[in-house]
Length: 244
Image 1 (spheres, rainbow, N blue to C red):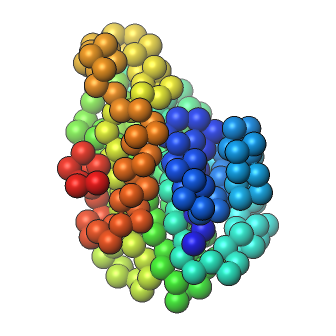
Image 2: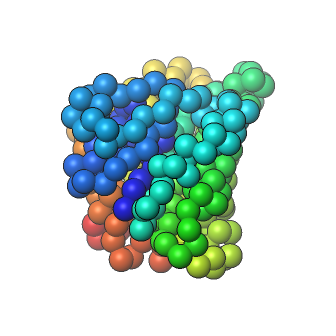
């Protein structure tokens, strides 16, 4: 068994990669920057690639190198966790920079879909491929000021639903909302001006009241579900509603 994780340099992605590696599952980790803690702790078992997933041309060029296929050689099962994402741009539509929109859609939507297709193409059809998109409650409930984020996460949900309908042999997929986690993204949310995000006070209260999950605790539950027999039964799920 081998795993691919995006956005492993910090936050939930770092915790998921750490959890997989601690269970002796080799990880190919993709992000703009490396994670020195994982490198020191796991050495060659964590193969880190520095690539800008928001640059679709650069990412496509990396996928064409064959390094993904090389990593997956001799694996009897493949796990993919599409975790990397961005909240920005935020605010009303008139405030959005079109270049920021393009980068957000490339990172939040294009990269996960590209990598999912590449993983399936690079691995034998006879083995099981488990694909997890890290989604959000924002995919299922619209929030003022988050139009790009909501739309991009909803795209992952719909991708998972459609792939599941394909019923391709050996492919299980789920777009999973992990709940609210104490990461840099939460700090970014609390820093958004109130006028740009009317619900900011709600997220400030989550931090103040200790209602945010530790990334390590969330990652353990995410990986338990990814490896469990129920994974893929529903193409869209919420970790808070699962018995993990």
